[in-house]
Each structure stands twice: as structure tokens, then as C-alpha cells.
Length: 292
Image (tube, rainbow, N blue to C red; front, top):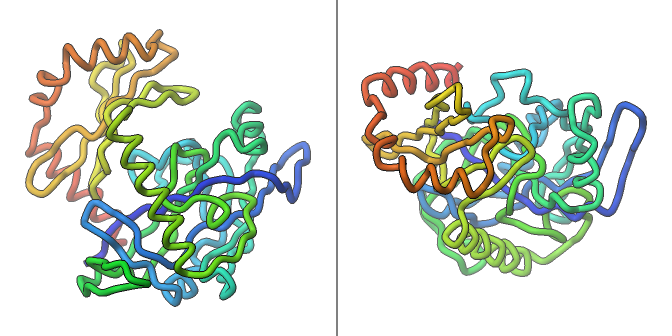
């Protein structure tokens, strides 16, 4: 079974390869071998699978702040840079690369936040084969294995990653024993879970975003009100379509307080607007694109 996944890492932005008029280039560790939590359960990402997938990251697009709403990059306006010189490092059992940001496609504030480490996380979007074989890696049980990875893009400046610096992220260069890495990634995941459970709202440069739950393999973005600047991300969970989060355009005057008030008043009625037949047809089209 071919599936879509994401893997997050924290930024420790202390080194710059290039900072010219046109480009900002930063080194990064994108992923490491380990066990990580996903919607389907705990996934094992083997070192040999990362090694074999490293070349697929060459030229992968960089997107900003969050993964594309289509999960894969299908809109050129999402592109903010590209991945260069990916290579598997045996020393870290992980994937290194350089991230080249195109300055004309990024705001100065976003690039400054990347350089100073204010935006500390990156996250790879990839497609993989689902192997239901369970097992144990360094004392932690996993439910399935991710195989034949194909890296589609890297999201830079996302909220909080599964594997934090100095083990993963932009401008990190640490070597750690597998057990030490495993503990660090587990701690980062626990922090992520607490953050989502306690305060699922976030504010980006363009949007107020609500209600995060993990996206499923098939998601779409619907415009609830173009005039008011309200969008919704709808994902399929099992046989049901449900709202994963809401997006409120700041250019339309939305603030965190106003968005939360709307959410409390309209969440239930908005959920009832999902048309299952329409979303199933959209999902079929989306899955066709993935399988090409």
C-alpha cells in the first residue's frame, strides 16, 4: 500500500552557507533512523531506506510554514526554494542536505526568522510503501515500517518537529548514538502532543489556523467563505470526512480572538456542510495524481 507521510525536525540555525542578494542557503539534517508516531501508529524509518531514498530529495521543492494543503506540491505559488546535495551519512544514520531559499519568493522577516532560529522546525513530505511488519528498534516497539521512500518536498518554519536539534534540523551537525537519538525524538514527540492538546491554534504571516489534528492520507481545502476569508482543510478518516483545521485570512481582518469566537459559534454547523459524495470523488482524483 502506497501512503503519504511527513517527518519533522527542529531548526538550530547557527550556520549559513550562502547569504547573497538572491539566495539564503542553510545546511540541514532532514531525517534519521528511528521510531516515530504517525496517525496509523508508530512507524520505523530504517537507515537503509533513508539511504536508498536520498537521491529523491535532490531538487525537491521547499515550502514555507506548513505542508501544502494538497499534501504534495501541486501549486507553484507554494515553492520557496529547493533542496540541494542530499546525501546519506552513516555517522548519523540520517539524511543531510542544503536548503536553498529563493529570496524573491520569501518575505525578509521569514528569512530572518530562519537565520536566527526563531522558526526552528523543518518537515519532509514523502510517499512510502506501508509494510505492516511490527517489531522493535532500540527497545521501542513499532507497528509498521516505511519503505521505498520518495521525498516530495521540505516544509521550513513549521511549528514543532518530532526530532529536535542537535539531532535533526537546519544547520545542525551532531553525531549521537542511536539510543540517545531515540530518546531525544521521543521527548520532542511528547512535547508536540502536549502542544497540540493544550493550544491547537497558531498564527502565521497570512493566516490564523485552528484545531490541529493529524492529517490523514487524503485531504482537501474548501473555501467556506471567499468574502470573509475562511477556508477549511477536510480529511478522510476511515469512512468519514471531517474537518482537520480552519484557516482565517488575516488580510480579511481576522485576529486570533475573532477566529476563536467564530470557531465556537460555527464549528458544529460547518461540520454538517461536508458533502461525502463530493469529497469521495475529489479523493479519487487526488489518489490518481499520487499514483502516477
